[in-house]
Length: 342
Image (cartoon, one colour):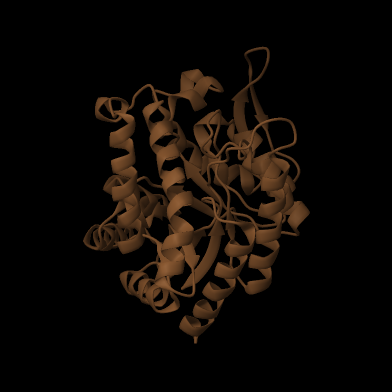
């Protein structure tokens, strides 16, 4: 079982320069996570919302961190490969990976309005193209005069293969598609019951093995995101995470409601109903889907996820805790990771 770090938090900073502290926190946490042996750092791509507002371009932040994920339908595949080849070179190679998301919020697509309706098809179609371009193959595209030209992206990356994940919000079909495309898969633990997660992983493994070349025994990586804070007592954990996690959950609901294709039941929620929903979600996070608790609680959760076939847990740490608390929690989690690996 591997542990990584994920950033996806809401940020209430406003005014010039106010976000700089957030970036300072990210860099400090990443440096400590790297020292502690966490295998990766995940950053999202988000636009125009308080939720995730400091992550508009994973490639730019990736130049500092050498990691990232993206909403593929918002980008030309050539631009993706060129940008991440630069990051791969800056990192020395072997330190990047991309999780392909199809996108869901209508406001994001002001950057590519014609790509919203068929965003899922576009993302899945472009995954094989990303691989070919990364490998140095030329591909044909329409140029400024309307003619077809063959182009090859530059610079050449150091890594011979582009590690790819497919992001899923819960649909069983996406897990199967990830297997058939032979990508890794990135999901959120909170999106499933234990039984659903076991079913999804089984479906993924079966699809992945179904088209494996003869003699190939490799398996894809199942990565699950989980809100994480390992504290010294149940009381301390509940006290420290309640306020920031509740604020995070309410921000997430507000973002969901602002989507033009949001469920009417979400947009119609009153402020009181949103409070109740956040309270319910908070209790569920403590019971399942999060790494929120003491050493014994988090150890049990990690071992359970490992038994289900999870290969990596991406510890979501920037949901509002103080930097020192985040660092302390990561240090305690690192001890468990070493014990589980023995």
